[in-house]
Amino acid sequence: MKRYSLMIALASVICLTMLGTSCLKKKVYDLVIVAEVCAEFEQDERNADLTPKIETIDVGEELDKVLADNGYSRESLTEINFQALHYGVLRLDTPGEWAVTGAITVERIGGGGGPQTIVDWSAENLTALLGQKKAATLNPAGTAVVNQAIADYLAGSLDVVLQFSTQGGTIAPIPSDQDPLTFRWKVWATFNAILPETSDVLDPFGGSDAPGL
Image (cartoon, rainbow, N blue to C red; front, top):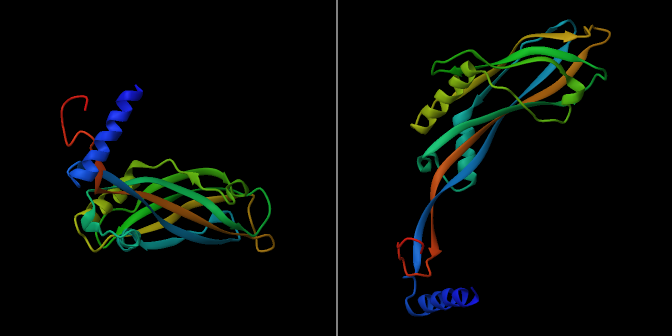
């Protein structure tokens, strides 16, 4: 075993010193860049119904920024996937055991699609969500809207804008003017952007493709 290892090491040295880069082999692998697109909602509640809130995000622009920050562009991509959606409470101004029930919808602005429910939640405890990033169970209808949007992004569309909205929510216990519920919460949508990357790797056998080498 030791002798075999030494032979590989010697072969590598000989290749590098005598043949230059002839022992370097091109390898193409998938590089995955994780991109998060976020929406924040400010809530000030005085009765049992959660006030609908809307946040519009230019997803295409946000993804372009993430790629550019890493030295790439959308033209480099071979694939992009919608991976997950998380939510959590950033700030809770009113102490107490508040429970909120409702949904988040998503709509494609200018390109069709939606509004469709992407997340339903039931009796979420706001205190328990404070400072957390909870994974959501995705609704297929809303997921389809996002998937179509990012497919169009990959195809070169310049109009990939999504609108996230809170809908149909109820609050317990019921807040009032004397005891309001004010909080700020956030939704994170996570995407995996996949692109090919080429690297030179050392081939101690001089590029042999023989089985086992």
